[in-house]
Length: 377
Image 1 (tube, helix red, strand yellow):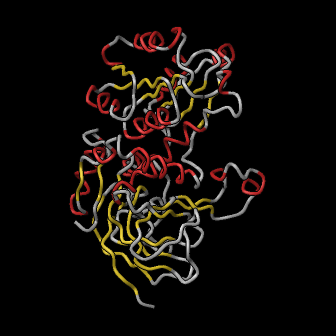
Image 2: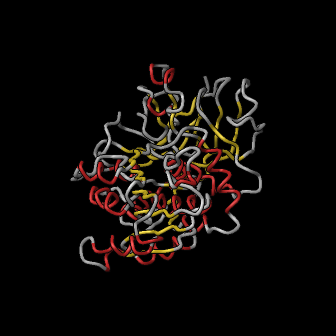
Image 3: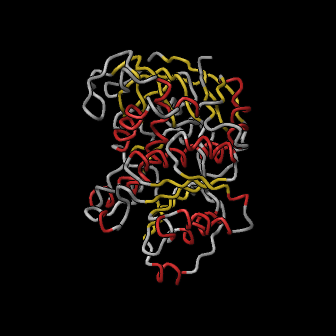
């Protein structure tokens, strides 16, 4: 078997990031070889660097990726949506693969992420075949069983690296819907009010999704004016800088900005700090909906009064990533909104493999909206 080499970033259990050559074996009949153009550094990548996940180190990180198809296995003709694919097409990949069929996959088909055995690109040990399964590498192999999507020809290829974070953001909003009842203000609906806590990339994209879905009001909360101004370009109708108020005084400001001053219909927590979840429960109106999105990894404990949940009759949803088909919605949003929303401006810190540490630092210190690694630069 011929073994090709690929330059890639390797992250070890001590948080060290270094560049190495990794093996890229010949693809099988159900696999695809992709030349990676860029990969975004997600908040979970930063957390991984600090040992925030129990992983089989070392790993090749990176799951927000876009690339070009270089070789297609003989058994593959279309992507996961049924679009015909050819060498040279732009492509992006759903990171998660259900590695087993268990009680959850057979009894909860609408909840694929409940599967007890999942493999996730960018989080897998380097020893796990076929090795090239993290986006911070020159080459990447889409394995048999993985979901992947051809990018539209008229879409800037680099924007394909935003499909995954848009899928995260849009799935959170989907969870706020109450099927068939939005006109009664049960769950999210057209013309309603949504608050997003945290004007990071995921929060900004959640606000963009809510506005695109017909929200009459999108209130963005953050501590940095520059980020709040940027959120307006993505559709935020109101912004609140919480640092301008003492303690939780900003909550009343948010409530007063909503129709009738009762609070928003939906709150999406995208900060990832326990206090933000506590505040979300205070911010949302009685009988409203809270979607917890920010705590993908452990960041501490929140203090919650259970009686408040009862007396406010709240609906609270935890949003873990997305089902694979969420990529279809994300690509549609990206394609349809790219003429009016400055998606490319999110990529404000781009480097090659040699400067990855600086990019990780910039992402962690909020100096970048989304730092990106370009393995061929």
